[in-house]
Amino acid sequence: MNPLHHVPDSAPGSPATTGGPVTVGALLAAADRLAARLAETSAARDANRELPVAVFAQIRRLRLGALRVPAAYGGAGGTWHDVARLFIRLAAGDANIAQAFLSHFVAVERVRLMGSEAQRRRYLPQAAAGVLFGAATAERGGRYRGELATRLTRDGDQYRLNGTKHYCTGAWYADLLKIRCVDGDGATISALVPADRPGIERLDDWDGMGQRCTASGTTELRDVAVFSEEILPMEAWKTQRHHGGASAQIIHCAIDAGIALAALDDAVAWALRGVRPVKESGVRQAADDPYILHALGRMSARARAAEAVVLSAADLLEAAAAIRFGAAGESCLAACEAAAGEASLAVAEAKIWSTAVSLEVAQMLFDIGGASTTLRTHNFDRHWRNARTHTTHDPIAYKYRALGDFYVNGTLPPLTFSY
Image (tube, rainbow, N blue to C red; front, side, top):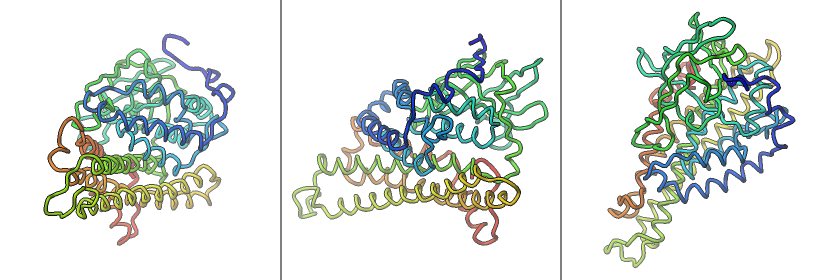
């Protein structure tokens, strides 16, 4: 490998060297076991802000990132239902790790959707082998969210990348970065480059009140070399309806549902071990207090409903993706767009519900046990802090508007990567 870490098409990670076949069932079972272990340590990890570098090393070894990679490229060929289930479980264990893992699956889907066959053969086997993708997309400044100042400029037979990225969730733990920028003509592209390429500096300067261990910090880009085969064009997808935005959104929904389930688990455990009944309840133990049982029942109903809504939307997303990847000819284009529109609407509904539920259930945990639940020793407030921080990602007010506009006027959601 040369000093610029330019990976040739014949590099290790081709389908023949991915470490053997993987299956959806095996990966989900491994994720369930990992999530159970994460749940035992998530409170301490958040309290001490211990970055889960070792956890992501384990995720590499388990090859969880192979779930959505097609079998033809060495992956498990999982559906979006499988992906949503994976993230619900991981987020129930530790929402930080789930969110930091999100950008890997977004990058895989972008390569499948927007990449050339040469790029698919280059990057997908790496993802199947355990290589992790991260993202450096968002920026501060500009008139609107999503505006880009990061530039890719021609430099002889290659390119140079310069700019500053913020909220780079997953970049700290990644091997490859998907960096969104604009070229000399103003066209939007993504550059897929090794995270340790000279000129890339990842900073651990994230100080949000929640999701404290996602390391969603700054990435500085100074004259980073980019090769032509590392450029993923995005401009055409700004005017063609597709499932790429909904695929990112469904993972955010799954994370919020997982946060609600984590808060529910802690509430049930607290009711069993730490709660004294109110004297006027007329019962001797909290397990018989009708109001505690009512609160737990309400929490459970909402958390399970959020999980079900997310998985249902994931099924429609999978239908849209299957049509897109199997489509051929103009006759299929309308079907692709219709299915993508339906998926976007379903995911918007899931986003609204999972956002509300994660916040409500995380808050209701404190209705179970009184003042003692606020002790820092338990760190129960991390669930609400995580939910409140994560749910600021996309304003749900615009999801409501998009749904209303469709049902009243038949207008599909905007052609952005947020739907």
